[in-house]
Image (cartoon, rainbow, N blue to C red; front, side, top):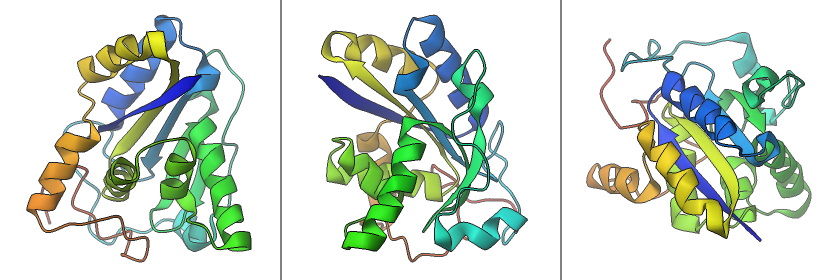
Length: 203
């Protein structure tokens, strides 16, 4: 039995470093996943200009895959591809959670269940409150790294994620709630983000 462990990163450089460290530590790439807003900051705290649009955004409400989600290569990052998730918009992603999110979108359309990233996280056993925080973090421009780890490997995985500046749902959720946030709202405009940590962007 494996547990899903997730962390939010305020830039993709940290998140990608965490993926590499997890792979170097012997974790199977098939158990790793990374999802980032297309305009998520690569490093530092600089965010894309307000209202910036891309061609990929045109399909954001449809959950359409615009590229390969899982590809070949020596590591997970070699398989990065583009897809769009309702309520979040275009993302760069690789791994099982991204695939589950696309499937959750289809399942929600067919059966009325919660779809997208929130539905995928809940489907993988993530607590609903935590899933809301992680989905909101990606919507705000953060990068989410998730790993399915055996119980005996959970502490080791968490140590690696934390060492690369990963933030857990309790810590980030407390910050969001101080700002009046209550839960992820997929109807909120996905191009109106203030960064994963709720930090004001330069205009």
